[in-house]
Image (cartoon, rainbow, N blue to C red; front, top):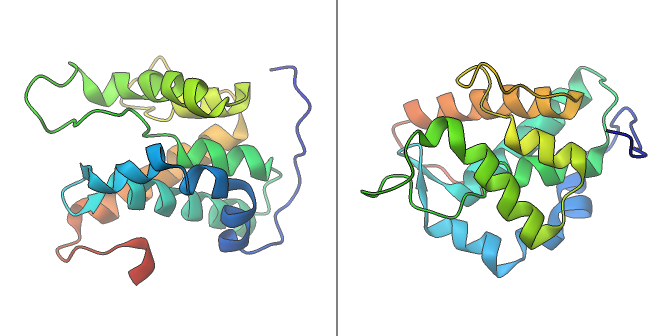
Length: 165
């Protein structure tokens, strides 16, 4: 990955960074359509992706890890941008290990992601896919945040949206 990144310690609030670097995505009709997709039993894909983004930003800020905030926000928002109903009959086999690559392809097509963002999205399902792991620190933070938020969503009885938190 030989691109110029602006890695730094985050000092801004996660919400401010989400707005600064993610508004183009969160306001796009294609991404807004994720609100209609159930994810992890008690959430939808839109809320899940936003929650993962905020969690990842908090992790990076709290641990004072140098990251490229723009790539972290965009990669996290688009990590589950696979555009099919994974609960419906006939969805792609091995969804848990394949959807990262599909999401990366869709994100490249629709939002022109950079190589760091592509790596983050494609490899965020480690260790469920043991041979595909992130090559950048932003990808490792996404992987951690996704697992943390997913477990919370899966075992929360009452449906909560990002706005309720």
